[in-house]
Every structure is written in structure tokens, then in C-alpha cells.
Length: 306
Image 1 (cartoon, rainbow, N blue to C red):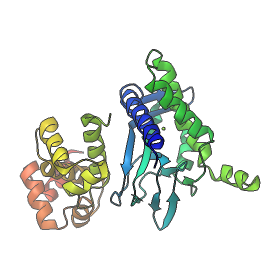
Image 2: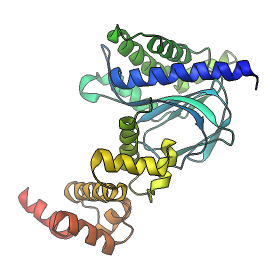
Image 3: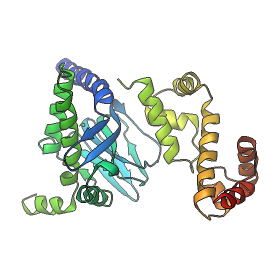
Image 4: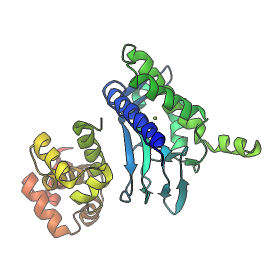
């Protein structure tokens, strides 16, 4: 790689990092006439190697600025290269792999149902079911052009017009429906065919834990997913939440178990499995120590109060 290439990449990274900080401050809620989004985070990772197999309860879209790798979605895998845009659908296990590192920008979001119209909600329900999740040559697509314009505007002092930022962000997210719609894919074939701050890292970690409670959730696995050190992640939980990483996970498992005990008739053994406790004995011991009542008693007491 030449000095000019390195310098160019550095300038792009600098722009992306500036944009990331502004977007995570001002563009976490976007509103249109028909639809509104809750954005969980905007991100940039200049050297993304491997992350663990995982899933989200929300959408995440990534744009490859450079590098090569693979994206695994269920039993399928897709080649990643410069100019690729790919979609992670809600509740689908997926994984990004790269031996040399990928330069990625990404956004994670979900639709705000209470502020969106039925037709718009239906459109994103269809997006969650699409089989078209990777567009290999996307640099000249509306999505990529809007994404680059948003990065350029926000990284060059464009904070005077916050409405423009949120409108651009909203337009970018809306563009994903056409990019990944299977009808659009058929049309293309016929024609030949968007500063990882500490608070953002912690929020991403909490989302990852919430959506993967059935998995082992070791400190190093979550840290690897966020591309930070295990020590840094541990310090975030200690400093920001005043509790250890492991204790936070125990509480989250118990919180989800309590919800399942209240809202479902799932057997206690199955609840122990889906919340990651592994055994009924361990589940009962931890649940009782935190809730001061056994799982069975907790469920019975809740039923009596209804």
C-alpha cells in the first residue's frame, strides 16, 4: 500500500470518527411523515476481524469501505469487499469474518411503531424477512451516496442544521428497504443487473447481552464483538454501572426469567435453558438469591395477583 493510500484511509477514518460522534449525539431518533426510527448506535470500525456468532433484536446495516472478508447468515455465506453493503436481520444468527480486517461503517436501528404508519411498519416487516441481504457492488447506489454525504456533512462542521442531519439519517435508513428488497433485486438482474465513546460501547454491550442471553456470554467474547479489550469492557461495567460484568449478566438473566415466568407457561427447565443458566438447580439458586423467592413460587404468586 502506498503512502498516498495510507494518507487517504487516514482522512476517511478521521471523517468517519467525527461523523460517528455527531450522529450518536444528534441522530438517535429520526422522524419522517410516515415513519420514525430509534437508532441504537452509529459506528465505525477501521479493522474489523472476527466476531462471535450472535444475533440482535434489531436491524444492523454495514457498508464496507475497504478490506475483504465473509459474512455468515444462518447456513449461507457471502463475500465482503470494498463497496459491499450487507444487512443483519432481527433475531437471525450471523457472523463477520476477516483475516486482514474490514473497514466498516454501520448503523443499528428499529422502527418506532407508535410513531409510524401501518404501511411503513409493514415495509420493514418485509425487510426482516428478505432473502436479499448482501449487495456486492453498491458504491454508486442511492444508499452509499446518501451514507457518504451524511458522513461528509457531519464531519465538516455540519451541526448547525440538526433537522437536516436527522432527515438525511432517516432517508438513509429508508433507502435500505429498496436496496434489500427482493423485487428490486429481480429488477437489477433483468437490467444486468451509514467516537466509539464509552457510553456507546456500554450500550452496545448491554444490547448484545440482552439479545444473546442463551449463549455463554464470556467477557472476552463480548469485548471481541465490540473490538475493545476485556479489561476496558470490565472497567466500563464497574465505573458506569457500579457492578461487575458477570453480576450484570446474572441480573439480566433473572430479569428475563422473571418476565417469562410472568408472561408465559414455559416450563421452568426450559426457562433455565433459554436464559443461559444451563441447569434448573443453578437457575433456582441464583433466582432465589436475587428475588428472595424461588421461580415456582414467583410464578404462583404472580398468577394469584392477576
